[in-house]
Figure 1 (cartoon, helix red, strand yellow):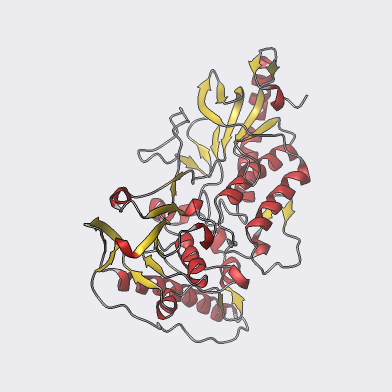
Figure 2 (tube, one colour; figure 1 turned 180 degrees about the horizontal axis):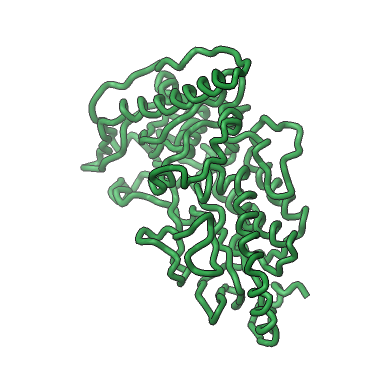
Length: 430
């Protein structure tokens, strides 16, 4: 059976791909959205049971679908996030093909061909909205752990019941590492945490959520080209904080007082002993300094604008580590949870759109290959890019750019309308 050519193929049906579809549909642009699983899959499959957003619900403002619930200052848990995305899709009925995996993207004449596990699609223009977090990262030293130690990546962690009884080592102190360590700690497990250089931020300060202050101060709208070093900005770890139980700070020093064992970076495994660097103190100090620096900026903003806000004292460290490297007998732990992130996988894209590190070369999502776009990347244009708060602006920008090429796309579509391209019948919708 033959399927028709599309002016635009959007690859990825998460919040970025759906936002793109909404903007294209509003403009009457012919397109299809390919999603390898189903809407909301990444949130459903790669988040633990107690996961919550770290930004308030009022920041959920996908195109044409801002949050309208009764808890704007709360933090949606995982299942509500999935429902929000599902309801968003239902609100405008995008041309969505679920269960379709793009396996190869290449140029084809003046346009593109997208090979999938359900046949090929062709398009004048393509938007890659798959996000940057596809492949779990686990360091090679994991191979040196004793065989009795169960190893779990953060993407596969669900709850303490899914972790073997006994003491647990969590490696990584970004948002996932700190929140998973807290989840296990609150369950009464003995947790060992390898602390890296991720910064932290306070949940509330001077009468408001810190996110509300930063939003008011324009931080989420500041474009990346206003920074001197784009690559360094994009590589920064997110600040750790939590929206759990109404939102609160994550203070690793307080966890240490409560029995959690903290170490510096995991540096090696030798003869059944886990070795850690001597950087625990400096990593904790750095995280605190970033948090206090954010408060400095808020104080200055309040003073400059004459805002009536309650005074608040500053954070004082409640615990300090003993200087020097650390070690842990591997036999002490029954499991290790690797909170070491994900890497992007663009190996299926056979188009010269990347730099030497494999990162897409783009300006606000417009790649150097005419007709190829990227959406949903962290810091694609602003700090809000890729998040529920900023993806709408990025999608709208790309939709305008795609629309400006509409006449060319229409001509190409008309030329190809008589050609046959195999597409699985389920995807045709007719």
